[in-house]
Image (cartoon, rainbow, N blue to C red; front, side, top):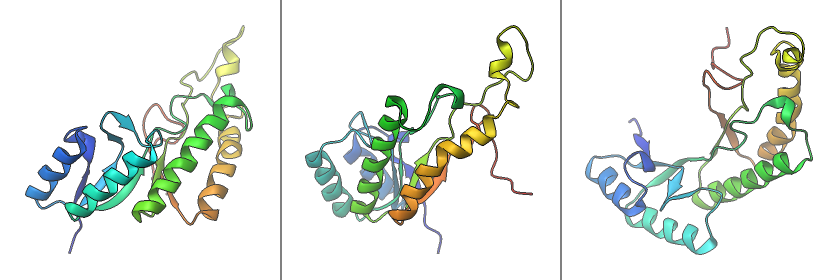
Length: 171
């Protein structure tokens, strides 16, 4: 039988209200992104504990922890070990911990920002997407994938026209 769910803040950021609506409509898979106006990865232990109690009370499973890790950052604007990268990596670790707490095998990440400039000169060429952007993306994601592997978590990579990974089509 299919399992059906929703991103809870698509219903409401009032987490209990979202769970009530889900329960009343036969949904039992909660994807967590924003709870009580806080993004996952920014929640305190007591808030996570409260969320866990509500999930249990409404007989919900957590399908995925979905934070906007690595969203909106150009691959040429960040390096492994700099403060921006480390901040996103730390928030990813918090999301992985939350996923493990709730028994979810999935954590969503974003695939940085795709540079839209395909050509240029006099400075514009540094934004050219063919100028090593894909190799830089692979470099930036290598520690992320290693962390997920060590944590026994599967990463879900959001696709989009504004992201470095625009499709999940593999051929």
